[in-house]
Structure formats: structure tokens, C-alpha cells
Image 1 (cartoon, one colour):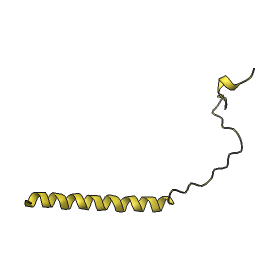
Image 2 (cartoon, one colour):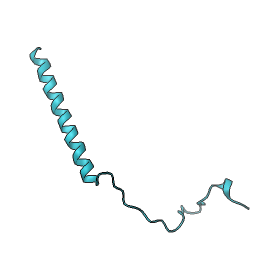
Image 3 (tube, rainbow, N blue to C red):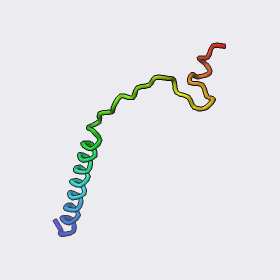
Image 4 (spheres, helix red, strand yellow):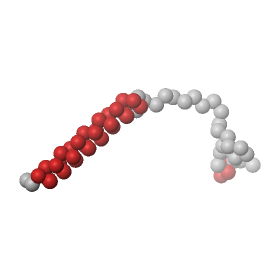
Length: 59
């Protein structure tokens, strides 16, 4: 192999290692995918918009 290909492979390997380490750090920092349960007491509201589609509303 020529020297430029070896340098390119070393750079690609370094970038891959940095990406893998960064991914592991972010996953661990995020809580390993655990999402806390959000308690919902009331239906959502957005101003005057209904919380049900109009097709389900019985007049």
C-alpha cells in the first residue's frame, strides 16, 4: 500500500473510534433509553381546538 492510503485509513479509523465513543457517551448520559412516565390527567387543549377529531364528535 502507498503511504497516502495508509494515512487515509488511519484517519478513517480515528473518526470511527471517536464516533463510537461519542455514541456510547450520549446513550449513557441519556439514561440508556429509559423515558420517565408522564402522567396525563386531562385531555390536551390548544386554545379553542377540540381534543377529538370532528368525525368522532356527536352533535
